[in-house]
Image (tube, rainbow, N blue to C red; front, top):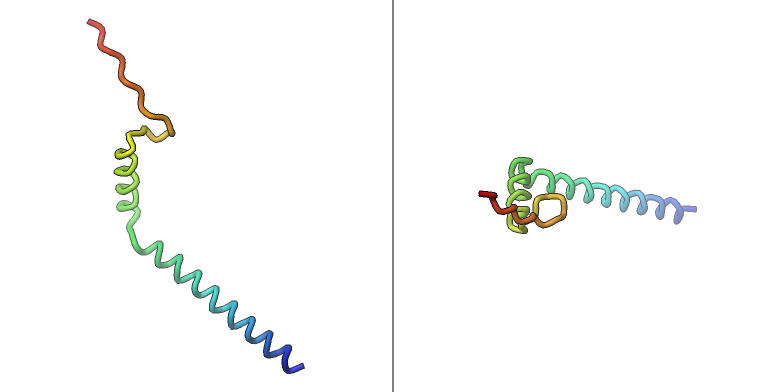
Length: 66
């Protein structure tokens, strides 16, 4: 009977440690960059690819009629 309580205690401790690790990771990810910095990085990456944001490459503009 003691072995069951020991296993239950170990499982509980492992669960608490795993939950703490997940929370710490999420907190670290969110605190690394400000929203404006993320937005600027995403826009610069979009400009580097040459796409307009809907997944299609931009079409060549029509020549001006004279």
